[in-house]
Image (cartoon, rainbow, N blue to C red; front, top):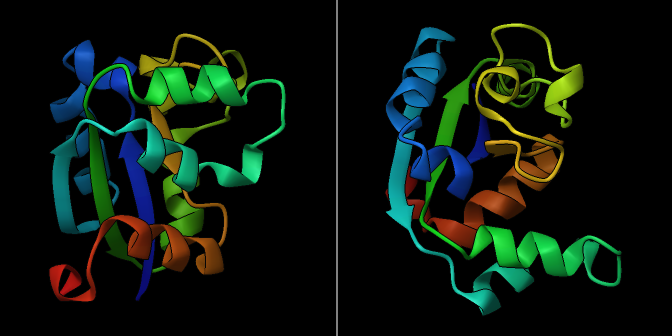
Length: 137
């Protein structure tokens, strides 16, 4: 079994799509190990997205991720990282496959409804950023 980290972003939470996205996660065979709704603070968002610091979109990203609550999820299944990225769809909703989270609920490349780890290594880092080991079972 593999684990990955997911965020239902502020745009999707505010629009009332959380339940639909969780249903998509479960229908794709994921086990939800941990989940919580949280309003990210600026320091938490800046730390989490530190890899993007200095890039032109960093300030806009931080503003977006702190504007309203998000839902943080620890997910598990075989090939979890690749499967969640498939369920999410392309970063740009315009290029996402039909039926994916981002095609259904994303507005644009910046407000794209969801986040997912891009590798098993990063999944471990991202999961530990938001969840203690005891929360993951």
